Image (tube, rainbow, N blue to C red; front, top):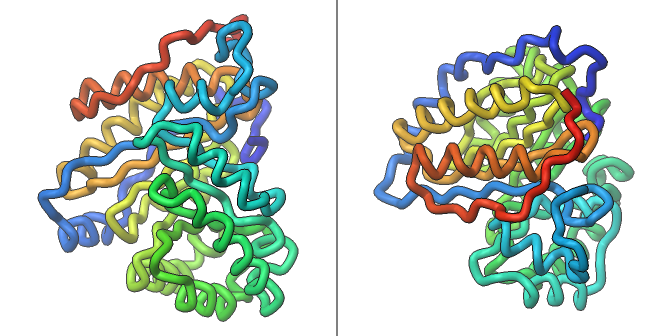
Length: 297
């Protein structure tokens, strides 16, 4: 993922901002005795991106990937709507506890930008995506960098008409969604009232969108490593933050690891899994066949 890439990551202050004042209030309102559910994974499963991850001779990449991680951020669905048979095949070849978190196709978010013509496309997308059945996790919508609050009415309509049988998360990238106070508060409350997850994106060059505002009982985090030794320190900080949120009532953690150059994403994810297993005793599988690539540091 190139979003937020910088040339000198060592110059970036990667410290996590303080929580938004209403994050604890949201968690206090929805506290329950439900067990903590944790998903950690990468964004892709192909060999070209996850170098040094697959054992020699691996033919079915998804089948193997799903024995090592319990989820995938399904970026492939951003580029096109696949046939029903593809979703059925993905569902059938993965374990029962595996979860897909698919991205909504770009025709809805980037090309039609949530206008009237987007809805028939969305209906087709959801029809085929539902074939993931019990392995379907939160579906997420990622808006273009230049999609700004001037299109607020489109966002309201989209969220209020979203079919409630599907869980939804949204990622906004235009700075005004978070740094115009009036807009931000209206957005957060719209998401909260409709049980829509506010995606957190942790990437080097866009610290302006680190809002730290949860809107429901799900932390959906898209972490973009900078191919720098600080990536591991940043993950340590996230373990501390998630631990704090868990103490406040959080029960759903979905954490997806990217890099500007997809070389060590599985290694970073494995590191995070070990830390979370130790902190939360969540017994996630730790990938066992990782081979470290030549050092980038």
